[in-house]
Image (cartoon, rainbow, N blue to C red; front, side, top):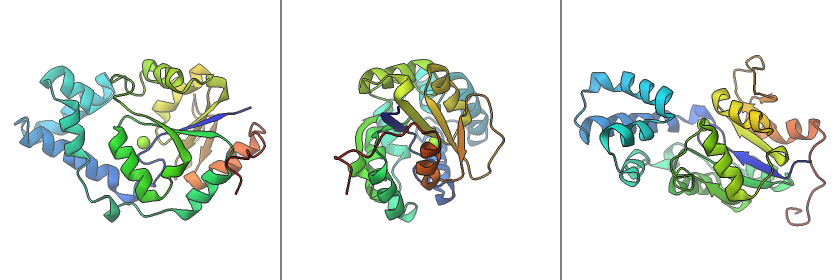
Length: 223
Ligand SMILES: [Mg+2]
């Protein structure tokens, strides 16, 4: 039986079409140009290298430019969230029905996660936010990030579903024994490490129910 649902945050709990994640990407590039004095034309290739080598731009900048993580994260998330993300009552209701302990597992920081959850109107469902600081900068898809998350929430991976928009971040979760769910409007063919594909987060409840691994609704979440 499942007991925990771990959720990626950006482009998972809200749809990619909101444009928030690309806007954060533009803030990241602005930080690299304005704060670090890097040439704008060098930034996209540098970010690609950091993504492949260090998992995130932040970890690349920490390794090679001694960037302060709190300063960086505050800068890149300094955006008018309400212009991108709208309250999602249908998601609020689906999460209320889902009889699992819900956890955000993000490469961003808890401050950003809390603001996004608040804007979506779903903060009440999340028992825990496992952010980049809680894991001492172990970022997905490094296996250490998943091991730290499991340790922090006290979960057996076989009792966890992990929901995420990037297949590369699902593979390590699958290797540990989690049930992996890819959120992808493009409906790609199933790939290694992906158990289920859903077009939108609202399809999660039916997808999990189809596995027969959802417990009966708990008294705590029953409305
Ligand atoms: Mg994401």
